[in-house]
Length: 295
Image (cartoon, rainbow, N blue to C red; front, side):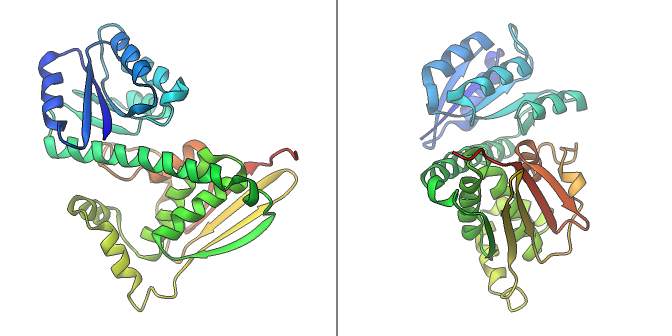
């Protein structure tokens, strides 16, 4: 069961959010001030999955609470969903810079709320599992100096993300690498557009559609090529898919049209932890990481 913490100083909104989210999959905890939220999160420790927080609280603003959450080791991988009556670009930029990628507006739309929370919970699950696997495979993979990988499926993308993060000696990079590799499969090789992905996620059939497209004759020989090269000054990873590219600059930020969608954050998340360079038309991305010191 996933623990969701709701922070809101308006009793009606707190009750409304709690009622919308209350089900067998979630354990709901509530707080009405920033101070209460801090105490609650500290007591819960690593049990918290997602925090739904009002941008304006009586004792602390949302950005200050967000910074506090992300600075706590026990909550660093928690996803924060920020809600407000309206958002200005500066507020959104602040939130993203502090690690919040999910937003909601009032009055709450129940299907949208449920979709955003599901996406946030799934993101936390992915982060925790990928980091665990990367830590377990770290020692052997870090011996790799050069390598070329060919992958086709989403399962292979997730597996390779773990091994690449291990090769870097930084398990926390696995989520960003996963986002880039999954994007290369879904959008690059299989041609699933942004709007199509949204509809497939809403119907719960994205994975089924990916597998169907993988079986099509025109896609059977497509692969994503990944190259790793370890040099004295840096470790370089290059990801190239078989697609026509995309408008990568658009997805390195969060524009107003995508702000309240449950997907479309992959490149943004990857950019927050990785030094990325997309090569036009966008079907090739280079990642440069500092070299580890020899032990």
